[in-house]
Image (tube, rainbow, N blue to C red; front, side, top):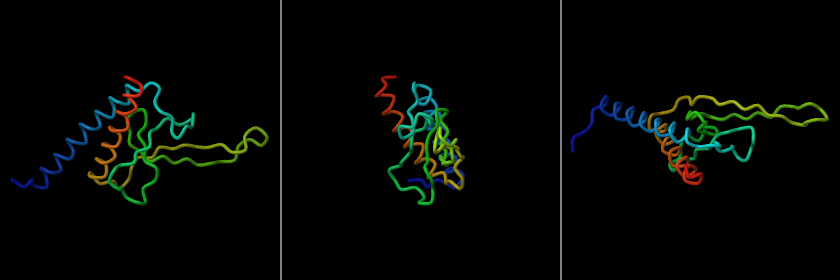
Length: 123
């Protein structure tokens, strides 16, 4: 078997990621409605839990309706007294320090979960 050179491997990983990103975007575009995150009506996102363990220090990684793979940060803040006791602020942060291999794991997880949801919605 012929060994791949470093640049060949990087090219292959990039091409694979690009193909998976297109699949994720296509699946996201088909879902209507896009799933709510953990039953919250204010956040549309699907949590990604790859079969292989990603970095332990990584926060909650999700795919958003536009196909972006991001970390979701939900912060509780004091609400208006008497109306709401607690409010929340959601922020989608780009993944930082992600290796190509880890990113591919998240993309594969997104394709798997979004395909299941598309089948459930029959789209």
